[in-house]
Image (cartoon, rainbow, N blue to C red):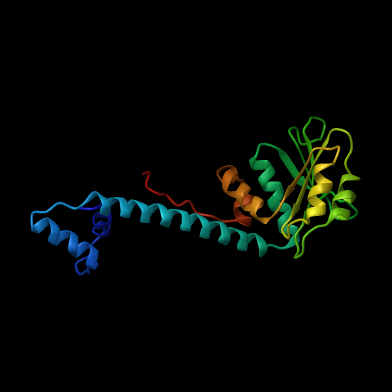
Amino acid sequence: MPQKAKNSLGATLTLFSLSQETIDAFLTIFEGRTVTPQEDEAAETDSAQLKDETVAQSHELIKDKIAALLPEEMEELVAAILRAMGFKAKVSPKGPDRGVDVIASPDGLGLTQPRIKAEIKHRDGSMGAPAIRGFIGALREGDSGLFVSTGGFTREALYEADRSTFPLTLVDLDDLADLIVSHYESFDLEGRALMPLVRIYWPVD
């Protein structure tokens, strides 16, 4: 039988219905004929397409969860991502922070490099070049900059970051969702509480 027909019979109940495609597969076998390879190839194509669609939908749902966070929660989420990447990260105390919302380093004291300073803008509308220049002005020798904007960046902002003399990475909403998925297994309890996700297993081709 073609794989698609087998899958449809994988978890049957006392009463169930079959699709016409599965019925046709049964009739083909009962008549002594074999199912053509093209039918199995079509099923594999359908499965791959479904997987791609599921991954894409998951990505969009994670972006929706991020967008629903409060600004303070966004800062905690970025700190959680950095901790999952092996850094010791903390959110800066409230008050004048000179554009630095999260500080991270290998030792947690900022005495060893890379010393990461992050600014998080959680709002609609893309960040322009003035915001990037202001953030760069808060960086010092030995610092690496991380600017997170869920509203994205203008072309001028990208150019400003590219010409920075400090290591500087810009992260938009799509990048943030990818970082969460890539490092979620190492998230601490605080990070998982902010962004509760469940793993979905998919058969290997």
